[in-house]
Image (tube, rainbow, N blue to C red; front, side, top):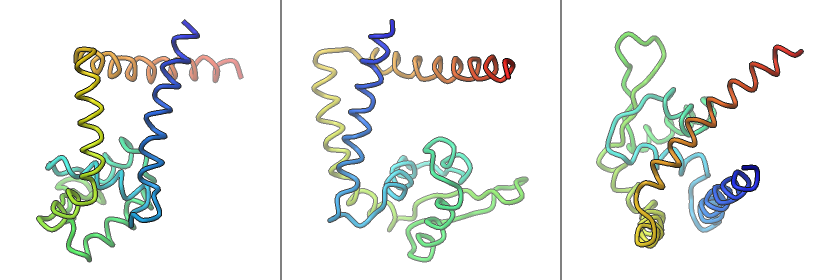
Length: 152
């Protein structure tokens, strides 16, 4: 199992590296955090800052600074979430959606090409398997950490 786990983690690292190398291109105007933020928002749904911070691993202070800057630029809206004291709902404006599509188009194109080629060889079950693995790994790490903490 250890060899398979290493192969999987190495494959995931290659995927992460592909994004990082292309996102950190000096010719592009956004930071890695800004790309992740824009990618998260470009699904057409409103999100909370807390949700994006935890799902995309963007520090809250970084996310807040970007959100304020983009709100001033007219790229997104920030609305208080009823019943939540400091949490805001974030959505791209029409201008923000247009900007996101321009900035992210090369990423979407590359993803679609790679996925199309992968699906010719494998079924969509590999995505289900990765999601399942991610959930099980998170759970296993939590259990292992609890056991480790008990040994201290």
